[in-house]
Structures are given as structure tokens and as C-alpha cells.
Amino acid sequence: MNTEPVSEKVAPTLGFFGAAGTVTGSRYLLEHAGRRVLIDCGLFQGYKKLRERNWSEPGFEPAGLSAVVLTHAHLDHSGYLPRLCESGFRGPVFCTPGTHDLLQILLPDSGFLQEEEARNALRFGYSHHATPQPLYTRQRAERCLEQLRTVPFGQTFSVADGVRANFTRAGHIVGSACLALNIDGLRLTFSGDVGRPSIQS
Image (cartoon, rainbow, N blue to C red; front, side, top):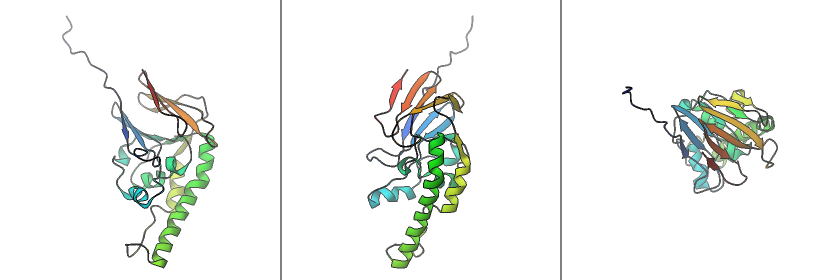
């Protein structure tokens, strides 16, 4: 007679660290079997109180992430990536080829604008800081691009142990995708900016 305890599967958890109470700063943290995957990595945009949230700790440890997956290149879904990498994230960033191409332009440009804003704040004296600093620099943004990994639409790929993914076309912007995750049989779908996430078991 087998007296060993029967192991039960631990359900994955999903944390909302952006785009909750607002429509910007999309960041969803999937945790499963010791793995942590961030879906989208967006900047908070709009009112000053929202933008100030970009300077706060993200609510999770960047170095502990296994991977990041991006649905598309809009900065409220991708623009926090340089800051994440600067804070210790060293894993792969999965995206479609179209998203990859757009990020080559958008992220360095975002870094340049961050630097320009810091220079203007110093020049015109509208910062509370003696030496205003950019959220990240153009150089930091260019460096994080090295972590991008492109995956074609329709190709299943492994994000982390027990987590597989697939991109399908969303028609939102160039390269935009709906992201279907298979987490040990549980299906979780992110639509980016089109519709709503859905969960199927």
C-alpha cells in the first residue's frame, strides 16, 4: 500500500502591477512553479501623479524574473524595460519581429526624451531636485535591446519551465499580438489593448 502523500498542483498566480485603476503602465506578473514571468513592461503616462509611479519600486524583484513577454511596442506596454534591465533583470524579452523593429526606434527615443526632460528641468528650475536625473538614458535603452528575442506569429515557444506561449495577430499596431499562455494545461490569454484577458482551464 502506497502511503506517500498525493502531491497537488499549485495553481499559478497573476499579479497586477500596472494598468489597474488606470489604463497605462501595463505590467502583469505570472508566478508558477518557482518561475516568474512579466507580461508587458509599460511606463505610466499622463498626469504627473501617474508618471511619478515610474520612479517607485515595481513591487517585485526584477532580478528574480525568468522572462518578459511583450504584446506590442507602445510605451505604456514596453517603455519601462530599460529601467527593469538597469534594476537587475538579465533574462530574455520575447516579442514579435514587428515589435522588435519598432522598439529599436521607440526605446532609444524614449531615453533621449527622458534626458531632455532632465536637462530642461535643470535649465528652467522646475524640479525639486538640485540635479534632475532621467528615468533612464538613451544608452541604457539601447543596451536593453540586446535582450530582445523575436518569435514569429503562430510559433509555440517556451517562456519558462511549464509555461509555453504563442503569438497571434492583434491588428492594433505593427507587430501587435494576442498572447496565449499554456501553464501546465491552464490557458491564459492576453489581448494587449484589444478586448480583455481570458482564462480557460
